[in-house]
Length: 195
Image 1 (cartoon, rainbow, N blue to C red):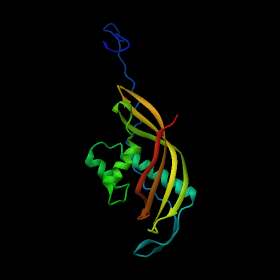
Image 2 (cartoon, one colour):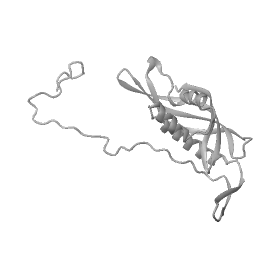
Image 3 (spheres, rainbow, N blue to C red):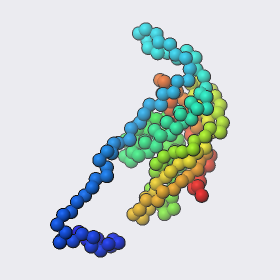
Image 4 (tube, rainbow, N blue to C red):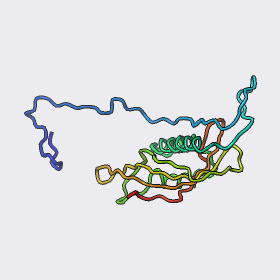
């Protein structure tokens, strides 16, 4: 085996008795969407009708962080899908919006930001999430939050992967539908490469 344009012209040649390969992806599993279920009210179980929420309240800061982190992780997983039809189907399980075209464009700013040289990029993980402010929505089953945090992003560029750290500030509207939290709207207030 030779690689005439690689760093080692002939790493393995015909005189080597064995050629081995170690698979580092033995435990790989496809990413999965997880329902975001954080209880923010009182519910009762009515026979034959099931569980019904009778009182709803806005989540406290820790509950809000849990909801935001889980919803952002689900959107990150949805952005792994590259087939447009499959992407729309998967993202539809995470967002709850009639304006999903404009929301997709806004989500792309955070989840697949443009990088120098036009390379493809994707979020690997979120960290340092902080709630800067919260308010109730007109919908009693939701809340709006201004959050800040950072995202680790990998960008494929000229045959290698560049790891970058972005800092962001977002305005999110989240609503609870059938006991599961979904993203209703997102506005990217600021996003920049961390120094």
